[in-house]
Amino acid sequence: MDMGYLFQAGGVVMWSSLGFSVLAVSLI
Image (tube, rainbow, N blue to C red):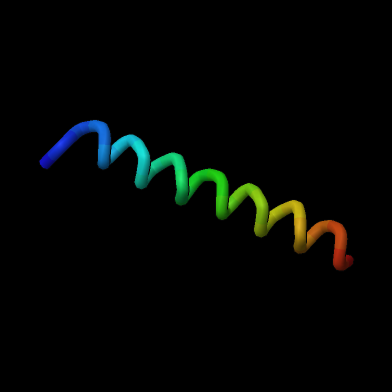
């Protein structure tokens, strides 16, 4: 398992969840 890939995947999950939270707040 490549650490760079793992770090990149974690970053994608973090940013997508962050963007989803912002979207949910703006919709309310």
